[in-house]
Length: 152
Ligand code: RB5
Image 1 (spheres, rainbow, N blue to C red):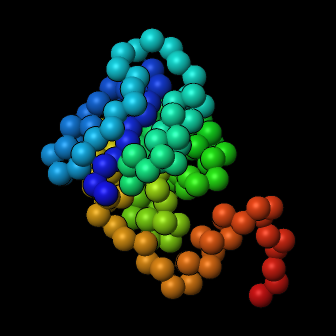
Image 2 (image 1 turned 180 degrees about the vertical axis):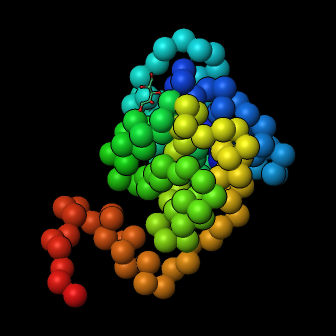
């Protein structure tokens, strides 16, 4: 599947719109869940809409944008099938895919500029999960309840 879903609140929608264009230019189909203008909405609702789209198989990846990215990441990670990574640069975007198999990129429109955000998106979409030792760790994220801490 080559669809990526986008969702943003009022603080993030301008950057989201910019990233929608960037994703299309990279050859991705886009599912744009809004918002499309600057009226105030609650970021947990926008994160939930994106999580639902992923659960329905409507998109392979998601991008969430709010003012800081923090609220979106917290909200999205309440949904068990979501691994949302708050990224600030190309390195965090790359490692979110390589180590965490993140399926959602969270960005803060008040924190990163549009160039950095576009670089994060491109890196996120072109980096594969590294597997290996990370597979066991990522699998533990999906265990409910979360596993007890283990000694070495
Ligand atoms: C909205 O003002 C702001 O709180 C929201 O976009 C986000 O930054 C929350 O984490």
